[in-house]
Length: 255
Image (cartoon, rainbow, N blue to C red; front, side, top):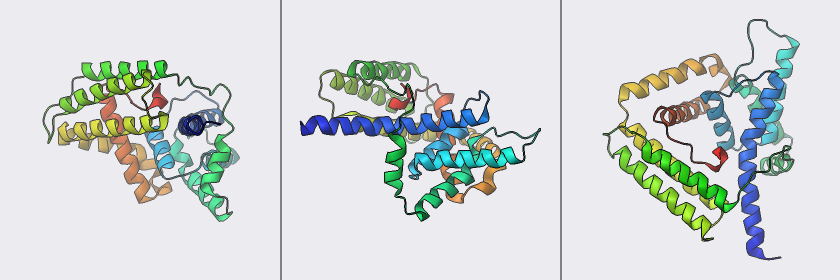
């Protein structure tokens, strides 16, 4: 077996598992709720904090089940489970229980994510990804970003668009280092854009968004640790600024 091809397949598998983490949680929550409900900004931010914290997919799914099972024992006609935040405490408890049972977090996540959901195959053909990168570059070029701050957001956006086009060209010419490395590049680009937007957006607007985050988090604060709340607030502000200025999400997850 060609070692280069084997490494490429492993890298692609790792990226697909990253995407499956989000989609599995989204679909599992929607199935348990038994009603169509789009995940909110808070929900997506919460999934990102779980992923960043190394919480295995299996722990997240177990925690969601535990939260719904507990709710089903004493259902309420007036209060429904409308957010993943309701499940946060159970997810953390499930993750801790898996540790105490000496089930390695990394091996458990790998085991849980090998069972890819039906229809989860995604097209990672170079031309498909290249088209996605170029579409995002066009959207960024057309965006009207705030001026001011320690560095101009418009200049950062122009640089990001140019980088996306360069990455697309490298993919098509077979000079790309692989999907995992590409995803890292996209993460860095998005972080730079966020930093530029944060610096250029007036303080009162940022305060307003943080107040909105605090209101959404209020019913669930006692279920979360302070560090988790702080990370959620950051993710929430990030997503709101991206939405406000009409910028695309750059991750391959959003293809």
